[in-house]
Image (cartoon, rainbow, N blue to C red):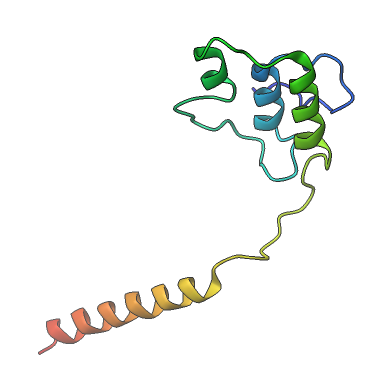
Length: 104
C-alpha cells in the first residue's frame, strides 16, 4: 500500500524521499498513484555528489510539484489519436493479407 499523499503545506516533507513518496502516491496532478521504477530515484544524484538538497529546496520543490493537488479526472487531450488510427489500419491490412494468403 502506498503512503498517503502529502500536501504542499505539510511540514513533514523534508527529504527528497518523502517528496518522491508523495508524488508516487498521486499527490501531483500529472501522476497517477503508482510508484515509478526509477534507475536513479529523485534526489539520488544530489546525494551521490555529496550535496543533498537543503530542506528549503525540498519545500520549494514540494510546493511546485504538489500545488495543483491530485488529478481528479483523466484527460485524453494530447493523446496521439492519429498514430493509433494508423496502427489500427496497418494491423487490419496485415490481418487481411494473411487471411487472403490462407485462402488462395
